[in-house]
Length: 155
Image (cartoon, rainbow, N blue to C red):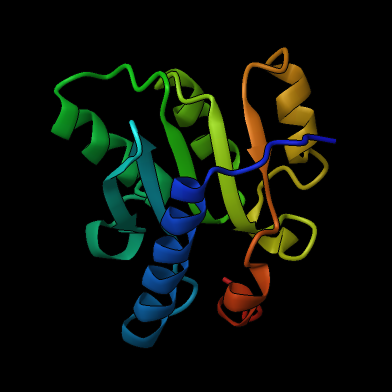
């Protein structure tokens, strides 16, 4: 069990991420995902998934936000940052988070409530946390009820 208590800035960023996901859900085919990178108390990047638009299955919202934040800061090392997401990040996005040096994660919807979006359903966030040696902290399920309607439909 992880006991990360999100900061006020992280909670505000999660509200923005959830609002962005809800707005995207009105404009695009479902499912949609949104993510942000927060560093030094500021949202550096806020993005949605771009898989359909780019025909690139790796352009998940988290990967896009990490890429945009790194470009905005002019460095690949995002140590000290927090990744904030509308959905618990998938396995690929967790790896990107770790490669970027991000050690805090805050998300809304959880794998337990929406397992169809995970390619390795038997591996949960606690498994990845343990496999990392505990090198990141996380808090999930915050505001999940606001995005549940987005993730009920399937792929």
